[in-house]
Length: 317
Image (cartoon, rainbow, N blue to C red; front, side, top):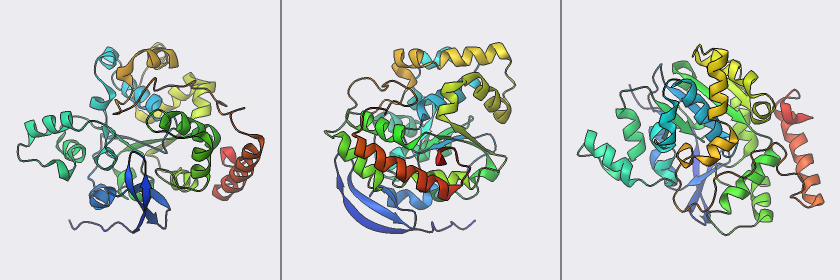
């Protein structure tokens, strides 16, 4: 079958700390490291399988928490593996071939064992994902319009949303541990889409317009924090894991904020990351962190853009 050409245009942008040269994709306004261009069509044509489980999110939306939940629900009798087997090895983070957040040496070692003539420049994680014979857990922060258009017809996808104000503050907490950056800079780049993965509203809008597809399950971080058992029951039905109430309770305990914070193997092992991966894990963590004029600007920005997606969208009011 002939490869599909990804329907975007690439424009050189600017350099940023850690990731270097960036490119802007139009019409989406997605900002990515320049290395993405090499892999764009391979990702757009990636062959998904019926038993794949994908986790697609805008960064800092509760991705790590949800990833561990999904893995625990589908490994209910071997959850203890998560205490020694890093999340890096249980999920395929396909964006790493152009973001390079994870150390690629061990991925190349695993890849060479399966394909001795493999080349690192061809993307070790994409190659490993394609070669995997067991069920695959695939993680990506790319929006739906940069994924294979057939993905929802092939496999199940979970998408998580988080209030943009908390999302922005969580990005600040994250990036301040890998580069020298201030909250006002993160605020301005987030509001102007000059941040990794670009426009928040484009990303969530691409998921929202697919919300009625039976293979897409949308979750809200706020709902998960308010009543995790209710959200686990919905996810249980979507994934077809058929767990009982006691098993779901074990999943909730396994993936509690305290347990995940205490076990570094339950998060991605990001190179150069200093300190704890977790901050507070609370809804409203950004409250009181922004100057009043920033708060007001962001409130108006959220109300306007959320209403454009759908007047009934959770963050529109």
